[in-house]
Amino acid sequence: MADTMQFDLVSPERRLASLQVTSVQIPGADGDMTAMEGHAPTITTLRPGVLTVNGPDGATDYVVTGGFAEITSTGVSVLAERAMAKGDMTQEHLNEMIEEAKTTYAKAKEFWHNEPGPVDDAAKLLSDMVAMGTHIGLDPEKPNF
Amino acid sequence: MANLKVLKNRIASVKSTRKITKAMQMVAAAKLRRAQEAAEASRPYTERFNAVMAGLAASVGGSDSAPKLLSGTGSDKVNLLVVMTSERGLCGGFNTNIVKKAKSHAQALLAAGKEVKILTVGKKGRDQLKRDFSAHLVGHVDMSEVKRLGYADAQGVAKDVLNRFDDGEFDVATLFYANFVNVVSQVPQAQQIIPAKFDGEGADEGVSTLFDYEPSEEAILADLLPRGVATAIFSGLLENAASEQGARMSAMDNATRNAGDMIDSLTIEYNRSRQAVITNELIEIISGAEAL
Image 1 (cartoon, one colour):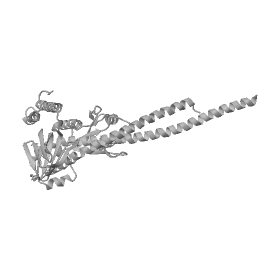
Image 2: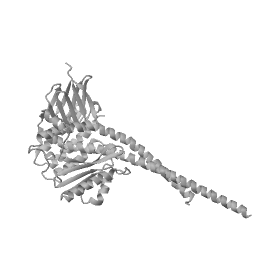
Image 3: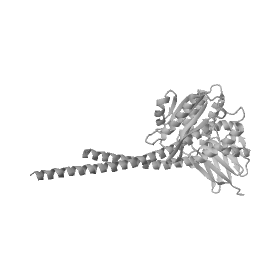
């Protein structure tokens, strides 16, 4: 036991985490996956969701949106467009993100008439956001006081 | 001999100018440190990103199905120049250098019979380009409201650029910004962002490890290329921010020193004329006394 691997979580603005961990749960675009040491080299895009890191000091949760994860047998690097510790996530952040996803969805519906692809993508993004909000215990619709 | 009162006022005014430039220098120094930290913090992301993209681009790039953002539109007729400059002046040759680089690039393209469109980010570059290239300006991104540069700002610019690309407004996009070398040296830089070019050591690394891709290579590439544009713009903006503060700091340092020199020479002139007035009065008194 206790085979560890290097884990890096970086966003364009800063490096959020860099440590030795035992496993990482990644919200992949095609479904969640857990990466441990010795995982086959994989690159996956992320959907908005919660990334769980099992490190030496227990599990840490991060909220990530956009970007991708690069898994090699010796480590995982997650490059997320937006990432923050779950504890720092507030209702305002969520509202802002959902609002953004809604605008994208509305724009996509307006812009693409006969191609369902981009509209579906935008709709999925929105529902992912809402699902993420529910998952971390924030109300995706109404502000909580 | 200049009037004493005039000289005195002059000295006072130069002194207050020196105070202002000194303060600006110190503010720029503090901001520079912050800007440098921000640029430093974004580096791991940019590096990893480019390494992965280089690997992906190398494996997919050759096929016909490669996205347009990577392979280009098949022509290089219409060029978009994204010129990023500062919102404020008083930073030495910073803006002029970037604009000069962009201008010579534009002139070379025009001479080769290409079409040139210019998108400006930052007011100062727009003001300078308006004189010679007003017909080519297609848009402007205002950054004056931005207090602290975030990734969202870069995404805004990227979205603008990508929308134009999707509408077929241009074939090639080049980014102009100043690379921060050190406080006294900022090198204006031209970087092609569309079609995307990824270079560096990442290319070999990506090929040597065989990755599984989820969903598919093409889907990932299509998802990441627009992000790549935003990432390139973001790192350009950060470099620019650091360069601007560096340029302002050294410009204001020079100004402070010049003001000091000016005060010295004005003070000497003031003392001389004061002495001359005293001597004059003495001569008058003495000659008056002798005449009696």
